[in-house]
Every structure is written in C-alpha cells, then in structure tokens.
Amino acid sequence: MQAGTHPDYYTLMPDKGKSSLGVDAVREVSEKLYEHSRLGGAKVVWIADAALLTDAAANALLKTLEEPPEQTWFFLASPEPARLLATLRSRCRLHHLAPPSESYAMSWLSREVTASQEALLTALRLNAGSPGAALALLQSERWAQREALCQALMDSLHTGDWYALLTALNHEQAPARLHWLATLLVDALKRQHGASYLTNVDADAVVAALAGPLSPARIQAILNDVCHCRDQLLHVTGLNRELVLTDSHSPHRALPATRHLVACSSSLRETLCFLVDSHCHLDGLDYQSLHKDVDDVLAKAAARDVKFCLAVATTLPGYRHMRELVGKRDNVVFSCGVHPLNQDEAYDVEELRLLAAEDDVVAMGETGLDYFYTPETKIRQQASFIHHIQIGRELHKPVIVHTRDARADTLAILREEKVTDCGGVLHCFTEDRETAGKLLDLGFYISFSGIVTFRNAEQFA
Image 1 (cartoon, rainbow, N blue to C red):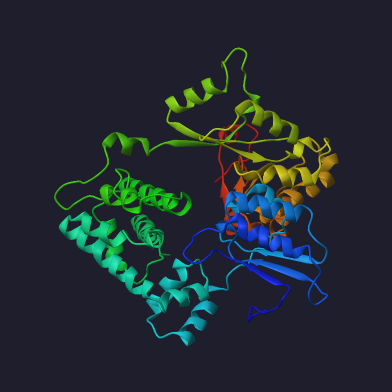
Image 2 (image 1 turned 45 degrees about the vertical axis):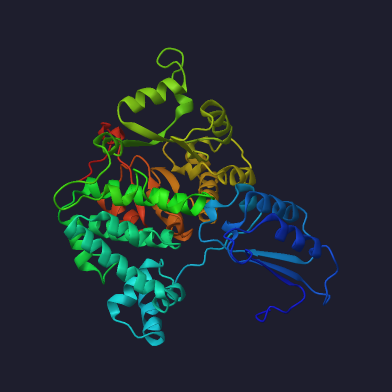
C-alpha cells in the first residue's frame, strides 16, 4: 500500500496541475469498487484532502457511501471538515487527530532540522502544532519566502510603499502568504493587550512595528481584509489573483503609510465595528403586537449596530419552525439542541446529529442541566447533555450550556466527555468565582446577562 501497487487500494487526488478533485476520478474508482476484490479481501479508498472534491464529485461519492459495496472502507481526511457537504459528513465517523504536545514536537523538530529555537517554535505554531508540517515548511523554499514577506512588511511600514508588499503577496502561494500576514496581525493585537503567547516568535521586531502606530481597531480591520482575500482565493475558482489583491478591500490598501493613509474609506471602517447577538430566540418573539416579522426584527437590530445573530433552538420541532420562519440569511446562523427543561419531550438523537450537521448550524444547544424546576428528569437531562457534547465533538461545533442547581454534575460531565475538543459557552452564568475558573480551564467562554440581577441570585464576588 505504501508503494501504491496494492490492487485493492485506491487513492483519489487531483490531476497534475489541477487544484480540485473532479467527478470523473470518483466515478472511475466507484465502478472498480463494485468489481470483485483482486486479492479476495477488503477494498480501501483514501482521499487525502476531501475538501478538494468539487460539488459534483462529492455528490457522486455520496451515492457510493449511501450504498457501499461489501468489505469496502473509505478514509477521508480534511483540515476543514466543516467545509464538506453536510450530507457527506453525516455518513462518516469523525476522528479528530490532535497534534502532540508542543514540548514533544519541539524536541522532535530539534533532532530533524538545524534551526534556532525561535524558528522551530514559529514554524510549529504556524502549522497548528503539526511537527510534520512544520518540518516541511522549514526545509522548503517557503521558509525563505516567509522571511522575505516579513522584510517587505517592515520596509513598507518604514517607507509607506505598500505596493512593494503587494508584490510579495502576489504569488501562486498567495493564500499561504496571506495566512502568514494574518498571524503577524493577530500577534500585534496580542502584544497590544499584553498577551505572551505569540505565533511569530522569530519576528518580534515586525510585530512591534505593527503594534506601535496602529490602533487595535485598525489592525482588526486589516485582519478582516486579509482573511477575506485569502478565503476568496481558496474557495472561489477562476478569480484573477492580482485583481483580488488590488481590490479596494485588500490588505495592502488597508495598511497606513508613514506620512499618509492608503486605506479604505472611513465609512467602510465604521461598518467593521458592530455587535453580535450571540443568543436569541427568534421563534419566541411577539410578532402580533411588537414586531411585523423577522425582517422587522433584524432591521431594528441592525439600526442598533447588531449585524449578526445566533438563533438558538430549545427543541427539535422548534428548530425546524425557526428555520422556516427565518429562512436562509447571511446575517443569521443557528444552533440546534434540546433544552434541559424540555426533557419530557422525546427526541431522536440521530435526527439531532443530522440537523446539527447543516452548514449554517454553528453550535449545539441550548443544552445542559437544570434541577431547579424538574429534578425528576435529571437522568434524562444527563443523557441528553452527553449526547449534545458527543455530537459537538464529532462535528467540531461548540456547545451552549445552561445550568441551574446542577453545578457539580455539569462540571463532571464536561470533563468526562472531553468538552475541550469542541469548546463552548456557559449561558447566563450565575455561579461563583471557583466555578468560573474551572470553566475557563476547560476552554469555555462565560456569558453574563440580566439574570445576575435577579434578587435571589447568589452574590458573585
């Protein structure tokens, strides 16, 4: 199999010179799978990057996955599984391959390549902790290209000649270079806020030069433009790279010169400062006397700079109703789940998994434990809570957790189910400082709302 000569082992990859995996290659392999095994055993299909499948290829593969031949195994890898078709993901068993610890990876890299500790650590962090990818970066010409980009950025900061930076970005590997630029901008933001964990530890002078004259809002605006350019180049076919990079929203235009600003308009900058309603129930509003419809609600929110909403479900029927009510919108995403106070309603866990796999579902929940009103359902609540976390881990989607009078059980389940693999937020936090610390240790966010002012709330100090 390593030599690529096993007659029942098939690898799918783009043709030379192409960046996507087309439908013809999938159909060709699928036809062979329905033939008898050459060696009388299993047949294996390996797709090293399933994100490269075109829509037609993914749909063709989906048909085979729905009715696979006997003794046939498909292995799909993807650095961004959320970008795969939801129907394709729903027919796969997800396994998250976590990188080794940073200290272990650094020790291994030190034996494999000669470089400074700063360079090793930077390469490792640029590749999300993957030592193999870090080694490949250090041993390729891309490392010198990154150093050249850092120098071009430093020169542009000093001279105001941003078109020199454009020249450094305009390359067939532009997405990688934009990624490097984005990490430098994030490091500059971290430096401004006193954070010690930086990615580009070998480029402290560049980070300092960015962090000095630029405000956090300006850096964030530039970062938005950089990420927008990179996303377009990665996922929209047929684009002219130079035109994308020289567009008015592009990063080289957003950076300020030494003596004057070569930037987007102030009105565009103002639109980049907005609020997000991270927990709303659009299906529970009064559409009889207070609001005309969802459009009216979103318009009122936008007038107050609330540009995006996370519509949170509390039951599966409620989720489906909310989808029908809201429809498909660029400024609304959804969560899918069953609230602990609704555990008297039976639901299908597999249906929850399929609904949660939809592309614009970004979180699981609202889930959790609430023993205040219905302690008699605590066993069902715990089982449901575990199901939500497990699905969240499978789909790499965070969980929205509600808890009341169930502090110990909530923390125990979060730990036992390894919630750090998916993360999440504890909604309407009313617990104490110790509990807050334990949640933060699990990688959780904490949400405060008006509920902390209830007269019977415990004092948080």
